[in-house]
Amino acid sequence: MPGPRRWPTSVYGTGAEPDYRFSFANERTFLAWIRTSLALVAAGVALDAVEVSFPGVVEDALAAFLVVLGLLAAVSAWVRWARAERAIRRAEPLPAQDFAPVLAVGIVLASAVVLVLMA
Image (tube, rainbow, N blue to C red):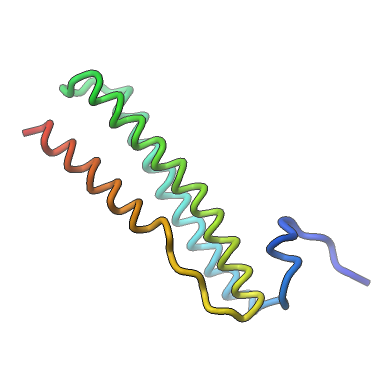
C-alpha cells in the first residue's frame, strides 16, 4: 500500500528515501536562510519606522532594498532546499550556492551606505 502523497511532488516524487538525518540537515539550512530573510525584512521595516538622520529618499531606498533582499533570500531558500533535497534523494552531488554571493554583496553595500551616512 503506497504511503501518503507528499508535496512538492517535484521533490518527493523522485529518487529513493534518504537517511532522515540528511533531510533534517537540509531543513535546518532552509530555516537558517529563512531566519536571515526575516532579519533583512525586519531591518528594512525598522529603518522605515524609526526616525534616523538619513535623507528621506536614501532611507526609503535602503529600506526597500533590505526588504527586497529579504524576499529574494526567502525565495532562494526554497529553491535551494528543493534542489538539495532532490540531489540527496538521487544520490547526486549537492548543487552550488547561487544566492549566497549576491546576499553577501547586498549586505556589504547596505552596510557601506549606512556607514557613509552615519559619518
